[in-house]
Length: 281
Ligand SMILES: NC(=O)c1ccc[n+]([C@@H]2O[C@H](COP(=O)([O-])OP(=O)(O)OC[C@H]3O[C@@H](n4cnc5c(N)ncnc54)[C@H](OP(=O)(O)O)[C@@H]3O)[C@@H](O)[C@H]2O)c1
Image 1 (cartoon, protein in one colour):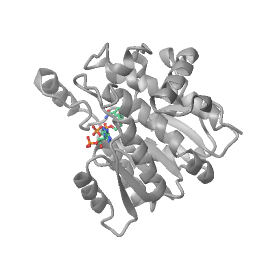
Image 2 (cartoon, protein in one colour):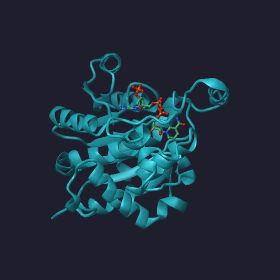
Image 3 (cartoon, helix red, strand yellow):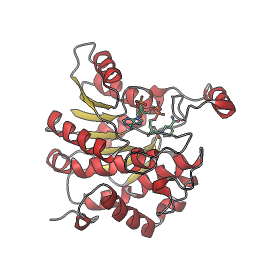
């Protein structure tokens, strides 16, 4: 089994990669820092396991494109693609594209990777797994303002961008219906990682609260399950709260918003507007 995991140098992503490697999978980790990436690769490859490294920064459109190209070169076959990389920003930071960094990393990166890797995914019959967040229910999206972080909030922008990402789930499922490619999203639980770490009083409170959270290995388990459990073969378009499939609710059911975000994401990532949600046949 060959699996690609983004953001695999720490937290849930590292635990996902480690569990897959232990299960005998060949794993390609996508990491933005080359030194960290090499450290991760050699730690995972310790027992002679097959682990390769792709260095890629998923916070700019060019970075996502280069990462996709490098993944295509490293992996002619992909059984599972795990979109794990994510960021909970404490302040508004615009990337070179003039877009808010978590909007790009959490939403545009999986969107563009799915498109750029689509020929490999189709040829491989891949499972695409999106690491989502239950906080999507608190998300609010303004299609003109959210991409630029114009309503930036240190707590809620994360939820907004996770909502954008989740609104793509039914569209990719529809796009790949009738093909062997499946896509599902999972909230991994409330897990003790570096996510959202920050300075100041809020950071101190967060550090205290996190002591009660579950460890990364537990958060990785439902992600790995979606990537490889034979019982889930063929299931697509589902959102899992840890192990339990749940219907999307509230803002994630706004089909018009989903369509508008899809069209916008095509344009922001430089994909042809004719690509549409349906796969050209
Ligand atoms: N922890 C939770 O309770 C929880 C709950 C719900 C959902 N999630 C989701 O789980 C996923 C993993 O989060 P985590 O909790 O493990 O957080 P984490 O420890 O902060 O790990 C995030 C990972 O994403 C990578 N990343 C961030 N920006 C990137 C970029 N521009 N390019 C490439 N990689 C990038 C980070 O790399 P660097 O080391 O280089 O920063 C890191 O490896 C996220 O999608 C998050 O939204 C987590």
